[in-house]
Image (cartoon, rainbow, N blue to C red):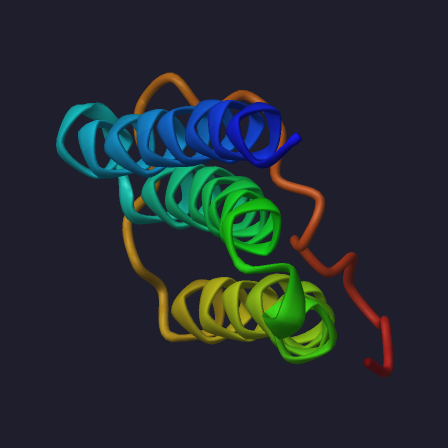
Amino acid sequence: MKTLLDVIGALFLVAGTSFLFLGGLGLIRMPDLFNRIQSGTKATTLGTILTLIGATFLRPEWGIKLSLIGLFLLFTNPLSSQVLARAAHRIGVEKSAKTKVDLLVEPPGDPR
């Protein structure tokens, strides 16, 4: 049974590492700040969660601590990326020419 848990844990670790790598690659390849924030946040959140699950299979006694880390990560990563993107939009960071829709543009007279 220990060997099966090791194999499952290793598979989760490889999957998590792959997503973390793809998130880093997205930071290089994306055309503007907003796309980089999106690719970095989504990929690193999933990659870290998968890595934590893999570590839980390898060390079941750490399960509660790793679950709390994952829960904290699920709350903070999306929130921090949204705040960074909104702040960048407000100071006027340039968007890519490929960007077609900007949902944060405020219509005239909007009191936000």
